[in-house]
Length: 226
Image (tube, rainbow, N blue to C red; front, side, top):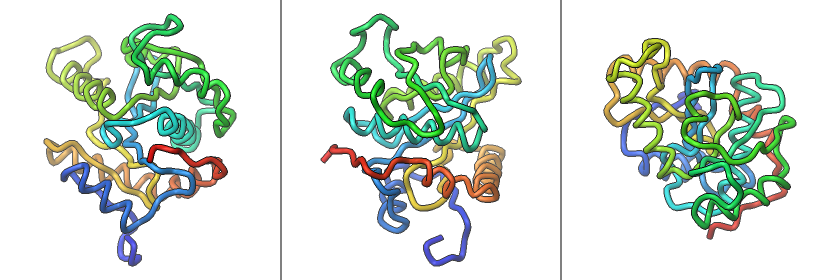
């Protein structure tokens, strides 16, 4: 990709290796310190953008505010959502719920400059991710997001839930924040999973989605995660 010999990259290898290689070779978007693996989930209401699902496991408020911007840009460009609604995943919707990180974030998200007319709509719970009703974008850390994603994969594919055939969780995620189209597949990806990852990468490249999202992210703020 860096040499112009490929338009996108797809891998089911070690996530950390992919992230570090992409950062070193392809570079970062202006203002982005940590990347976000971003998955598009089916919901009862349509589709929802969940990030991070495995890139930034140990994170901080500044990083998650930037991820809110990245998720809003994804929803606007890829899903064509007007004025995306951004929610913060936690253990309850009452004010003050969650750990120290989650308690620190609402004031920052309420005043953050979000692209595409996006707005912060408050705290949401895991059931809201399945319903898709309160938010178009759900922000969380990579540790929690990865657990949630894998749990949904198993619930939809193995437990025979009503409508499960139509609610297949994708095993491919876009690595947002790097200078190119990089799609990461599940480590246990099957042939069809890899084919879906390649199709996603091709779709994003044809739409010049990454370039469009870069233009939507405010470049005057840099996170301070050290």
